[in-house]
Image (cartoon, rainbow, N blue to C red):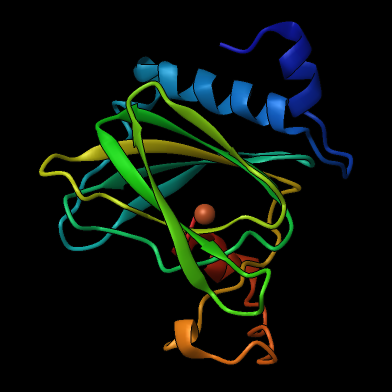
Length: 178
Ligand SMILES: [Fe+2]
C-alpha cells in the first residue's frame, strides 16, 4: 500500500516529524485503501467511533466513523502537523482562529470522498458530519501523541488576554477529538 520511499519515511521509531506533503500522501493512501478500513470501521449512533491504525516514532494514523450529527469539540493538535482524508461520505470542518486570543469560528469547509486537506501546526477546528449519511475519515498527525487543547465553554466570548486552557493527556485527548 505504501511505496518504498513513503514507507521508509513513516516506519521509523526515532523521534521526528513529517512534512505536510508526506502527511497528505499518507492520509490519502489509507483512505483509498478501502480493503483495509472497510472491514474495520464502525458507525455507532451512540458514540463517535475511532481506532488508531498506526503509531510510529514520527506519525499516527486514525480511522474515524461518523454518523449524522456526530462531531468533535473545537481543538488544536498541540503543534503537530496533520492531514485529513475522506474515505467515504462527507464531513464539514469549522475552522477557528486563536491568533487574537479567542476561539472564534471563521470559516466552514466541506470535504467529500477523495478530498485530502492538510493542517498547519496552529490549525484550530472541529469536524462535524452535517450530512444524512455516515462518513469515514482518516487523520494523520506528526509528531504523534502531542496533547490537544480544547475550546473552553463560552470561548467565543472570552477576552483576548484569557489564558489558553491546560493541555490534556494524549491518551485521552487523542482519542476524544481528532
Ligand atoms: Fe483535529
